[in-house]
Length: 246
Length: 208
Image (cartoon, rainbow over all chains, first blue to last red; front, side, top):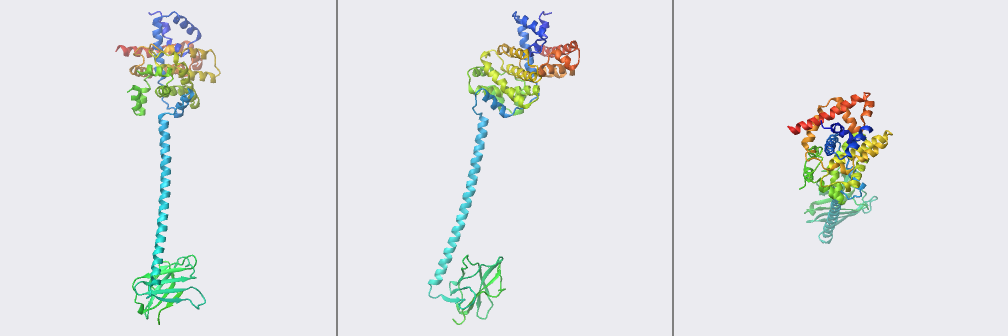
C-alpha cells in the first residue's frame, strides 16, 4: 500500500480547512518534505473540491453584483449591456418626446387649419355680403325700426345672389335652440332659409345663396327653433322684414 | 472566436448548464494575464465566467442575499489583489475563484457564530494562487464533473450530509459529530467512505 495513502484520504478535507489540528499538522509536515505523489494527490483533491463546490444550486445574482464587483476593483466602466439599456431608455425618451411633439404639432396644425378655415369662411361670407352691398340691383329692407324690442337690421335681397341678413342686438339663442331664417312668398307658406347663431356682441349675419324670385317674395323672417331646425316656423317671428309693396 | 464568446451566444439556460461544470477554459491563462496587466475588461470577463458559480456557492453557504452580494464582491477583490502570484501558464482560475468564494462564505459563517479564530488564517493559506496550478489536463473536464455528480447522487443520506457539512458549512469532523450527536469515529467513517466512493467512481470511469 502506498505509504501516503492515509494522507490522500484526507486531502479533500485538508484543502477545505476542516481537518482537526493534529491531522492537519501531520499533512503539513509531510508536504514540506516535497512528496511529489502527495502533491499530485492534493491537486486531485482540489479539483474534486472545485467540482463539488460548483454543484451548489444555481442562483442568478442580481445585475448590481457585477457592477459592485467592477466598482470594487476600480473598473467602473459601464458594461455594454448597461450601455445598451441606457441607450434604449434614451431612445425611448426621445421617441416619447418626439411623439408628444408630433402630437402637439399635429394639434397646433389642426387648430391653425381650423382657424384658417374659419377666417377663410368669414372672409368668403364678407366678400359675399359685399357683393350684395356693391350690387345696385340689391333690394335693401330694414327691420326693427320703431319697435320697442330689438333686434334691428337690414335684409338685402338680390335676384341672383339670394338674401343677406344683417342684424344687431340679437341675443344668443338659448341652449338647444337656434335661429332659423324663412323666405315667405306672397300668399305662400314660409320656406326654410338656413340656420344661424348670433355672435358674441349680439350681431348676426346670414346669407341664403342662390337665385330668388324677388317679385314673388313677400317677406323674410327669423324665428327661434330647435337646434336641428324646423321645416316650418314653430314660434313667433323675432324678425320680420316685409318686402310687399316695395 | 474565443470559447468564452461562444457560450455567451448560447441561450442562458444552456450556456449555464455548460458553465456550471466548466471550471477551466482554454484561455484562462490569457484571462489571467490580462488580469495581471490590469486590463479593464478582464475583470468583467472573469465575472462573466465565474460570477454566477461564485454567487450560487456563496448563497448556498450563507443563505442571505445581502451577505452573498458582499462576499462575491470580496471574493473578486481578493482574486484581483492576488492575481499577480497566479501562474497563468499552468493555473486554473475556476477552482481558485470557487475556493476563495467558499472560504469567504465559511469565514462569514464562522464570524457570525463567533468562531473567528485561527481558522481564518488557515483558510487564507489554503487559497493562495500557487496552489491552483499544475492540474492534470483531465482533472477538470466536463465528463469528470458529470461522473462526480452522479457519484454524489449515489451516496447515502448520511454520507451526503457529512459532505455538505464539510463543503458548505466548513465543519470539522469533530464539529459534525457534535452537530449530528454521533460518535466521532462514526462520522469519520461516513466522511471517508463518502469521499472514497466519489474517488472510486472517478477512477472507475477513467479506467472504463
